[in-house]
Image: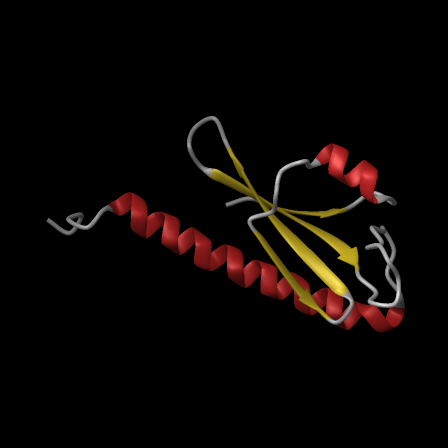
Length: 105
């Protein structure tokens, strides 16, 4: 399992040009949103990537940034932990699916 933490570009158009597909999961804490991307590899595995964005309800658009304020660090850490936990569950589901229902024979 590979997990890469990627901070999105400064604007939404740049970010969408890089990743036009949809994330596998979006989780968030406070004003921080973590997008989890599932990228298939040529050999059939899944490579996981996580990108972060700041979301503010008083602004019309989501702000994609490389920098976070001191007060947002706790939310960033918690969103990272939530993403890691979701990826671990997804990996278990994938392994269980690949094993098949009669794998214990």
